[in-house]
Amino acid sequence: MKPQSVTVRHRTSVVTVYPVTVKGATYWRFRKGRRFVTRSTIDKAKDEARRYAESTFLTGGRIGLLGEAQTRAIQRMLDVDPTLALVDEFLLWHARKCPRVTVRQARAEFLAAKGAAAGASAYNVTRLRQRLALLPDDAIIAEIGPADLPAVEGAPRTRRNHIAAWTTFFRWCRKRGWLPSGEDTAPELLERPAITRVAPSTWTRPEFDVLLANADNRLRVWLCLGAWAGLRTEEVAPDVASKKDGVRWEDFKWSAGTIEIRAEVAKTGVRRLAPILPCLEAVLRPLAGTGRVFEGLPPHRTAHGGRVAETTRLGQLVGGWKRNALRHSYISFRSAIAGTMRAAAEAGNSESVTRRNYQDAKSEAEAAEWFAVPKGYAKVTQRSRSQRVTKPRKP
Image (cartoon, rainbow, N blue to C red; front, side, top):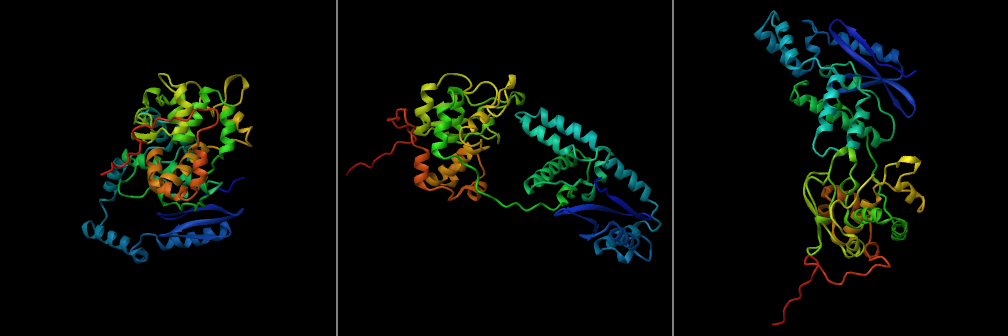
């Protein structure tokens, strides 16, 4: 049975002792002012928590044991109201200021708002629902502290993603007036797990050639837009439930050599332009038509009738599918020849994130191989206006 948090009380002073797991071993911890106290057994933690609760109990003789800021605040209260007759009135005012809304009620409204937001990704809403499901349903939002949040196991990235989802939810509740303004929410007070960054997964050109050779025209468009223009899957083949529009053939400005990623298509909600490189034009221009460039179920979704997802099928040909490797490949190789600033702008990424993750990841020779026009396709000989090099006139 999973260890549960326990509450230690002394009069009006309450201290919560909760379990933490470190390398398979269970310890017990409670908050003491601005720091945490950790003990090896629950009995030791409860004994010390009880002593701390007694020392912080608000009596006239013990007020000096509080922090300096707390002492000054209480002294101001006593100066204004020596008998503390206004405490009940304050508590009533505070209850009206921060209504007693449960996690279950707030979560339902939050998810409904996220689901109804224009351009919201169905996948993101699903992940939020899964992560918020761990929170205690009947707990009052305004009464939840860091110790009341459930422990999350798994990789550092997983734990950080959970904390980020909780923080988004609690901040939304604060905007609704269900939490005091101007204060950090409970998830924001949690310690963020450290993450060791690794180079993003990419494809090699021989692997990508195998993918192209075994894809139909519909999938070939998606593969090329991810690998040679840096588009996200949800920008090319959005989930039907998201009700988002995808890139259309009308967005291809062939004469200008750019693809317009409209604001309603871009994940960030900001319009951007992606280049039409010679390799991309050689493959896609013969396929150009009207309307959406990709119709039907997204490649990573399992088809009806027991058929595997297209990404799974293609991955079996190259040792397994690498998630997001198409876009990672574009940014990595493009950064080598155009710089991280330009690659970030074309892919709709943060420049700081691009520089941290992709700078110097690939050589110029590798980039040249990646963006070479594939065999069997005619190289575009006429340059677009954005790619034409103007030679200086002779005097």
